[in-house]
Length: 461
Image (tube, rainbow, N blue to C red; front, side):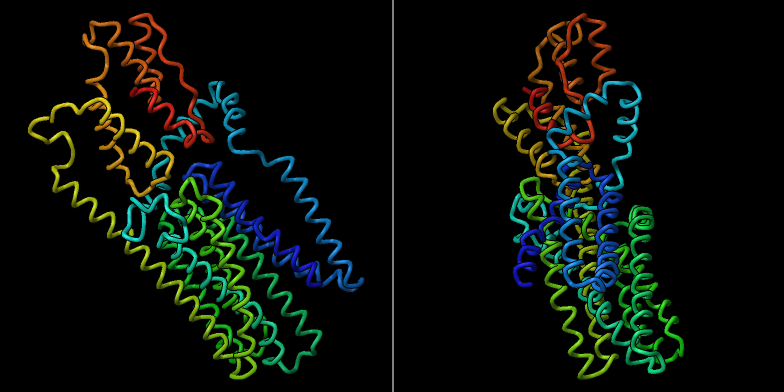
């Protein structure tokens, strides 16, 4: 048994790898839907695994182990067949991009890239110089780890305390009947939270934001966990526990994908897998600490045990509120800084002289690497526009001289427009001056991080 559990622990990195794959492949505006689906699958598997294990154990203890091995082999075959390296998906997606419908869909998807990026603005908890640091040294990543630990301690503690509470609080139920009632309640809880993750999280988080959603979810989770003994001691039927369990399902169903999606958006490109592994590490730690509440249940009763689990949810609420306030403070300080500087380049009395070419190229490469490769989503929409305007204004002194009457100058302008994605502008220049603009690999949803630095540097050099 110890060997079997050890092998299982070696493959415990599968969930964070799946989360990292979704983070690598999909752009920020599409991640909440897919990450919520992964979390819903994991939550459903915990419920289905317990039910199937209990059913198959009637045929002997080897039966559930053999079934688990078969499911693992099926997962391995599925991953080998369907999951490909993100870099390979770039070239496959570019072939589909060539038809007109795919091009229009991509343009529409690009125009809708606003809400997801705005959810993770600059905060004092991380970003800037810390964007490329190890996730274990970034306060925001550690805050997400604390959110994961607190949420799973509350949920895991309630899960192990629920059967004991049903067995001891409803003495008129036989032991077998109490076990069946607990199984049905736990199954309903799993199905409800999976439905919330799959269907409710995306619209709620898009409307409220990730951290406010996590805070509301923590409040619902704490109220549901703390309400289990209150409802159970006042109602004669165990089915009355469905009311607080509905709050637990709502809280856990919104909370898990919220902090996972938030963590994926602040993950550095260099440490995607390590960053997403924080969720699994804290989950395993919570699965060890949560069941220890049974000791409190045996010594002090159901009330204190569920109260400790609710306190974990309160801790999650406090962390989520702190992160949300830090996000708001970071956005306000950045807005005041822009207002103090005159709102951008347009209101300056006179433009400064052009910087030397090597200095300009070094600064441009640094900014583009931070924004495009470092996934530095701490740059808000307005600041990103100002940054791009500065780059363009600085680039034009290095184009070929002659103005609009010079074919060499307009050729450089056409190349710049093509590399920035303005194919229609580049085509107008091409038709007027009869030259071939610089060839550019089409921007796709899989290549938004990979091609950014190459195309931008090619245009500006």
